[in-house]
Image (tube, rainbow, N blue to C red):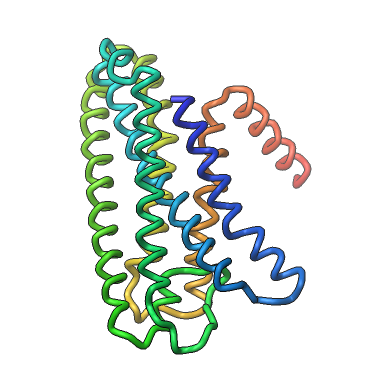
Amino acid sequence: MYFFLLNLSVLDLGTISTTVPKSMANSLWDTRAISYSGCAAQIFFFFFFMSAEYYLLTVMSYDRYVAICKPLHYGTIMGTRGCVKIAAAAWASGFLHALLHTAHTFSIPLCQGNVVDQFFCEIPKILKLSCSDSYLREVGLLVVSGCLSFGCFIFIVLSYVQIFTVVLRLPSEQGRHKAFSMCIPHLAVVSLFVSTGSFAYLKPPSLSSSVLDLVVAVLYSVVPPAMNPLIYSMRNKELREALKKLVQLLLVQQQ
C-alpha cells in the first residue's frame, strides 16, 4: 500500500508542477504567453501524470480487494516484484496515452488564432482553434480514452462491491473499522478525481463559459492532487489529533 502511495504522491507532484508554476509565473509577469513547444510539453506531461494516476488508482483498488478478500494470498499476488510491475504498467500506460494525444493534437493545423482560453494548454480548447476536419481523429481518440476510463471506473466499482460485501460480514467490529479505514481514503480520492474530471469533459456545451471552464479546470487539475496527501494523511492518528486540537483552538478564539 505504501509503495503505491509513494507513486501516487510523485504523480500528484508532477501534475501540480505541470500547470501551477507556469500559471503563477504568468500572473507575476502579467502575461499569458506560452511557446508552442511549451504548450505541447504541458499537454504531454499533464496527460501523462493524470492518466498514470488514474490507472494507479485502479490498481490500488485491486490491491485493497486482494488485501481484504484474499488476505492469505496477498503476499503471493502482491509481492514486491508484482507491485513494481503493476506500477510500471500504470506509468507506461500513462506515457503511451499522453504520447498519442499530444501527437494527434499537434498534427492538426491550427488556423483560428493562437489564443487558448484557459490558464493552461487544454486539448478541447486547442481543438477549437482548428479549421480542418482532421480534428475528428483527436475527438475519436478522446472517445476511446473515455471508454477506457469508464472501464477502469467499472473495475473500481466492482472491486469495492466485493470488498464491502466481505467487510460487512466480518464478525469483529475492530476488523470492520480497520478495513474501512484502509478503503475510505482511496474511495474518497477516486470519487474526487472521477467526479471533477467527468464534469470537466462531459458537461453540456450550454453550460460552457469562460468563468465556469476556468473553475472546472482548477477543480479537476489542481484540487485532486492537492487534496490527496491530506486525505491519506487522515489515516495518521497523530495528525488527526493535531487537526482536532487546531479546530478546537480556532473555535475557542472565535468565542
